[in-house]
Image (tube, rainbow, N blue to C red; front, side):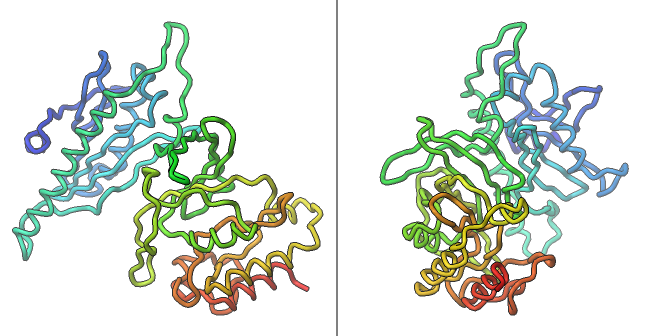
Length: 378
């Protein structure tokens, strides 16, 4: 396996001894400033479940062990440790992306492809071989780009007695720029808050480099940007600064990609104004005074959306922010056109949804109005 992969990827693949005298089945390594960095880690089994552990899980631990080496500390503090994982079982292969993010740190190992059959016993062998070759060609190019990334890293200065402190780049995702009004705006991440993050997206608090504005940055595969802008212009939502590709340079103007009721990407970045306040959910929980006009303000916001043919779709107390400037809706992931946009799969069974709300069901204005009554019962 290592011999074939080495030829395909044009790189040497050798086991690397790590902490606890552990070794992976193979590592793609580069040397920079006398540091040996693993940019690819291979684990293989003869079959799934061999030895009581599948190769994916074993590869994740092997990769973590590589980065746990003491001489990796400068790169751990300066990057999010991106690494490719290759896991095989017999003639099956999958590739994952590995990063270390957050504070305290979290390890993320995300599949980048399905588990792929490498054999040739298929009805259309030429097509199959071509598709397998495309995967390996992409991996080879990605390893080249990853090596260039590490060689371009500027490590923070250290002494024998001090260790560098983690930088923003080492703790959070890579996008740190977006375009707004034909100008580039650069920002840095401050915190992620699990209490604020949604099940379907990553959410973080950020700040512009000049420290003049705080931002909320999130990554989504579906988003009601038009509905968001409509309510932001009316004062019922935070200003939407950017919605588009992850490089921050190309705003999205085309509709969400949807197939059989599923929103299938691509992943995009949302950057919006950060508003000070408390959610209606927290205000009720903490027995705070609720402004008397909140219900009417939300009814007015829905009226603006509905008159333009939009449905909000997720009117619940965690999505209503109480601010000094009045209540605002903050989550437009589901918002879309009445009768066209659909609810996502796996809706929570613990929420008393409006009648007709179900997985993949079309979103209707009547659902918004019924959820408003549930939110503010007479």
